Image 1 (cartoon, rainbow, N blue to C red):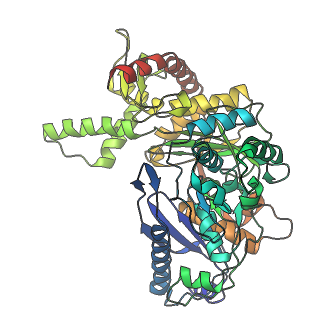
Image 2: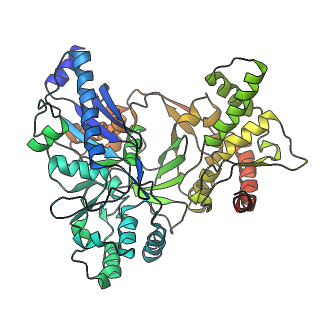
Image 3: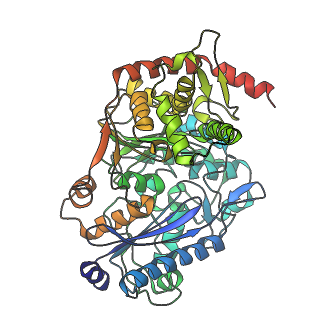
Length: 531
């Protein structure tokens, strides 16, 4: 307790604040990178005139309430007023579009990553660059606005993402961490900056529009982890903490996206490591040793907070259909008058899946509650199919449901691991799929034929991850890389529970995956005929 109090009094602390899609979270860490206080604020995006957005008032009232609750946590636990902090970092949902004029006025409502309104721009830029540009990327939003002939485009002085906006208001600096910048525009990892050739191509593309700016002029400066990204101004301190207790002059690290903070929080920033988050949606990130040979629609290319290339496979659907099946068994139990807790129900059904045939007894399932861009579907229809010869048992049903929750992910990962021969030594898992011991972890290992580890110290998620990046800027030794800092200063002594892929499970999952690919026309027919 005294050690923590001294760290707070002497500002040997780091604060991370992350804007998630439904919650803003703050985590304060001590000099040993342990979480010592936290706070949060719940918020929701709104659908306004066909745009998913948050208002500026949402952003600032939410941030202030989040900071206040963290400061109150410090006061309650340690009896101290928080007046100074060693370093601060901000993180947020990646991508999206915030455009400002020369007076700092927001020109159009914030367009978040959730909007799928940029398909023409996404396709045109992917062809122009020979590099996959997802719809949610900032450059796709900008070019779509140009294609739409939107009036505000000529007045743009600065374009950024949510965390870049918050960082700029609090410091006056127009910067962005390289991982977050890689969700705005393609990065050249050899120079740790935007790809200059692609920037030139974009300027040539829009030259006939005679706009008064060049792309680089309106983009944030790219910084890598460990660099200083400005200090908290007097106005910024009062905006963050309206009570007036927080001092100005606190250094800030480069702001980052939630992908970069997730990599940091799972110690997955070194080459040949990766992490997979499996819940409502599922995405895997693999740190590459080299660039891929070509662009793939199923794979996004971003970077670590230090600028190393990362391949991301992002799928919209994972556990929602499993939850629907579990609810069916909940209704059955209720009809029998049997009381069973939700955790026990999930565990019972998940453990039953371990008894199933390695290839699920010939069952085929798709968990597409919504569209799935990885396999080319704009809508979803959950379905289950089998032949008369299939072994239709509870074990095979649950195994098929768990396999299919990773089906689209496996297709993307197969491109990386089999077609591109990407080397992956370890994969860290987190999310609801892994709550039942061994089951989700075992099937994930089979899907990617790679050991999957769960960490004992997952910390506090992305907010903890950006706090660690702020701590790295403040505490790193000369020449110490981020992977070295994480290994020696953050995760030293932390244990991971690892499962190796079972060869029979790998064989079975590969057989299921072939059935999954061949059956995609069935999913298409369901979309076409089940309206």
